[in-house]
Length: 239
Image (cartoon, rainbow, N blue to C red; front, side, top):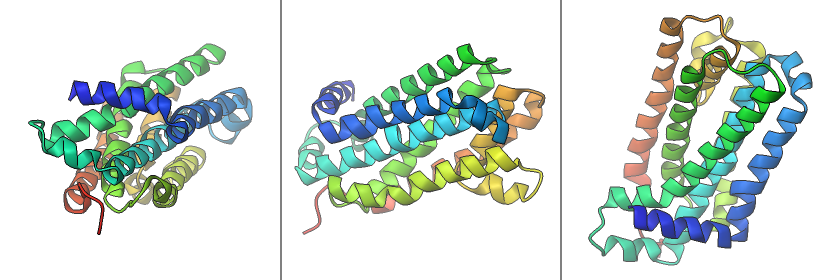
């Protein structure tokens, strides 16, 4: 798995499309939200800014990049060749997705650290870390599912748009309006409960026992996405 991951990390920095979608765009957007934190915190709170930063990076840096990578490796038959080796299916997929996941996590941590320096830091750092890891798991699982219906790296620009825009939109909706109204709907939507968890972790004021159950919808989305991936994922191009 780690040999595959190391090779994939090298390929990431050689591919201009992946470099732009996985590194430049997420950092640029995250930097913009930090720079405009006063404007966006007036709409919701500093926790809202943190949630939008997290989902922007996860949507474009992790989700979109992972789908593009898997589609490219299928198209050039690299997936098929890997599957003929001794590596298991799980280790192959983990090795391909691990580099983009680690890069996205580093980006989120770095941008949120800058935000914490510019303004007051998070009230509950461990809870924030749990929220970030759960979101990464959800977006990675959704990437595997989406890759199953993506025929090429170019096609990924189309297939990834609905989920990318949806999770960022949900984060904005929940972060601005809260969950006093339509709480169940907002928490069940992909990214809704994770947004509330990040807001609570950053702004504080919510007991840990009340915050941790918010992980359940995010974990449920991971289970659903993995189930979809097991049915939809293809190792060879359609003929």
